[in-house]
Structures are given as structure tokens and as C-alpha cells.
Image 1 (cartoon, rainbow, N blue to C red):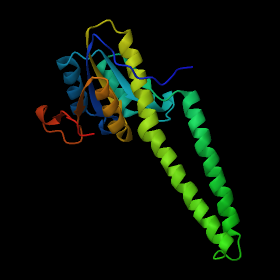
Image 2: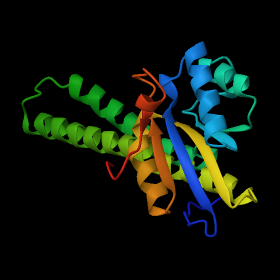
Image 3: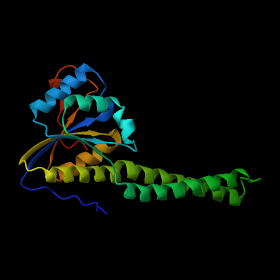
Length: 209
């Protein structure tokens, strides 16, 4: 069983180009730009964060078609099933508890009674806890596991200088950026939402997260 431990990779110069996976469409413009990025920066591998997708679903996606057109090694990354299973189980238990309390509350004759008001307050507390748990999973825990998976791949490469493209989910970006920079890895974010020319898509993030 893997342990979520993030350690700096020493004696390597690492540069990671981050691209929002939802910003890529199956167009010749995007394919040509990605090809140019791969060649310009000597990209060795590509990683893709998947979000509870199965491999068949990804295979039929636009991004999959674009990556296949690049003819470059790529890896799909997700939080380990056992880690996700534990976290999801905790979230599911809280969701079930809320559903049961809601049924009890809706069946009450006097919702303004002391018991009714207490029950309503408890439901609201649980909802806030649930939203917090989901946010932590999506915005912190999962991104940290993605960084761990990226590090594992980088450690296997013998190159002293490594450039990699990582396709991320929007919610993961702040934590992924923070963790990579804490590990002294250079991070460059490419914005494909406003493409006019090669120069305009290069946005080098300097401590914005």
C-alpha cells in the first residue's frame, strides 16, 4: 500500500507545463500547438489527471484523440482506489445520515418545536461538514496524490533535465501548483481558453496560488 509522501527529487532540473484538460478540443489548431510545445520544450512524457473516469470513457474523449496524435508516452493518474474508497466511504456515511435525518424532519408534525429546530440545525451542521469533506478530497487530498504519482514517474527517468506536460482538472490547480513549487519544480501554466498566437498562450504563474 502506497504512502502519501512528497519528497523533493534532487539532482534533476524539472519543468512541468500545466494545461486544463477541459480546455482542449479535437481541433487541428490545438493539436498543432501541442505538437509545437512538445518539440519546443523537449517534452518526455505526458500525464493526465482523470476524475473517476473509466479508461473506456477516456479513450473516447477528445483529449485521448489529441494525445494519440502526438505519439508520445502518456499516463492516466488518479487517487489510489483504496485511498479514494476510504474517503468516499466516510462521505457516503455522512450523506446517508443526512438522508435519514431529513426523512425524520419532514415527517414531523411540528417542525418549529424544540426537537424540530434542533434536528434542522444538526442537518445543517452535517451538510457543512459534508461539503467540507468533499472540498478537501477534490482540492487537497486528490491533487496531492496526483503530485505523488507524477513524482514516481519522474524518479524512473534517468534524464538530468526533464520537461513534462500535465493535464489537470480546474479544482486541482491551486494545490498541485503549490505542492510542485514546494518541491522546487518549475511550473508553467498554459491557457488554451484564449488562443491567438503562440506567445499569448504562455502564462508563467509566479506565486499566484
